[in-house]
Length: 376
Image (cartoon, rainbow, N blue to C red; front, side):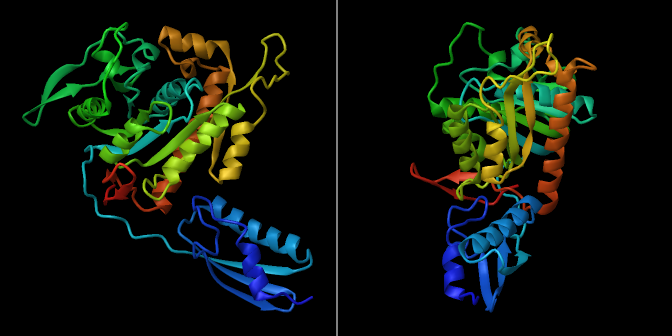
């Protein structure tokens, strides 16, 4: 059997690298293909050193060649990583904040805010300094989840300037539009007003030193998301979904938004919420009410990390309603689940900071698209 270089290239046009819309030949990832009888050497150039992306690319190349030509073909893949130089920071930073993590969901009702609250308290219990910005302007829930809905941020002076002091609960600093409106009051604002309110909570607040700021984004991929990513250099994004097909479709759009060329925010991974239900009287049983491992399979398909799954547990809902995140329950299933997920988030953040260039803050230039400016 003799392999043909042109046919190999044609076969490689059927696969792509994670995060790139074009196939690996069109995107320029395939630097060269050399054939020697039944042997083929593929030189690949990637822009990320992430191990799971390199391994997936190598596996995809071997599979397509074996499936298209012969399982006996000898395939060697040489991978070279070329990462862009780190960008000089232009645009606003929040002094003292090391990592800014956006927690997003394509669809409402999947438990994104619940996951954010429990990630925050778990990070704090691990010894990190944590803040949460409730960016869900039209449906703020953090004041309820942290039992501080009647609190009001006070003004303090920092370096001669008046700043908002975030509310603190369970060693987590919080700011939310919910602190400035009555519980029954609807926020009826157009996009620019919402963006202005967010900027005030971001830049006119005395956040102090934080290891992690978690931003609880509203559902979807709309104006608030663009405003946040325009205002801040986001370290990475975490996407929350249930296993249900309709939620997965929207979660896929959320991942696509962050990885798009105009935004280019690394996706740290996907969390599957409401993964299964285990009755207390049948602790060995798992009932997959919304489907089985849908978010896990989506993460594999999109070649992003899977951070873990959260089961349906009544105490999670009750704890959120009573203002005490369920991960605070010591020696509980929920505590164990969120400890594992939080460790994965921390590890992916470390990997991202060690291996990838600084994220750019985007600048909206037209209604139709975005162009990047240098940022953190």
